[in-house]
Amino acid sequence: MTGKIRVLIADDEALLRDGLQTILNLEEDMEVVGLAADGREAYERAQELQPDVVLLDIRMPGMDGVESLRLIKRALPRTKAVMLTTFNDEDYIVSALAAGADGYLLKDLEGQQLIDAIRRASRDQLMLPAKVAGKLAERLAVLQAIDDTKKKMKKLGTDIIDLTPREREIAALMVQGLTNREIADHLSLSEGTVKNYISVIYSKLGTSDRTRAVSYLASYLAKHFESPECP
Image (cartoon, rainbow, N blue to C red):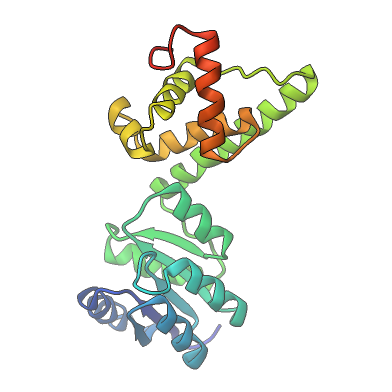
């Protein structure tokens, strides 16, 4: 790529858009060519301006950043897209990377780090800060655990559910009707960690339907332990 890096900024906060525009336009090798306040506008402006790099927030009114990213990548596969958000959640990270994000940055980073990330994205280099990479590693560990469990059950030729003490604890709270957030608060865990545990439980049960899982768990805990409330 020759010349300046042409950047489109999409964020629903006007003050942030204007601030980023000022910072990036101070760089000799960058030029902000457009601004957008939501995902739909980002997609439309990207088609019109064909920027080198798009900065996308995750949560925006109307169309969110991930859906906008999918459309932009489909229409402009050579345009790089970097997510810039406050949300360090595994689901958002995985969804964004699956949709083709060339980077996932958190808004607490320094200005120079953002500038460097844009330059790297323009050179086809994926940008993931340590905190984001750590969250991604947690999700990959869960997927590996699910795969290992499936292989073990297939090898043993059994459908017996083998829950760890922590999984039984979470299962009991699911049976009581607590939400993931309530379970997290009760056990002093992050909501993402609870989601990971529940993903493994679902895998062991062979279902991703919470109602069916809770029904089975209530019966399982009552049969094998004194009560679902006290595994």
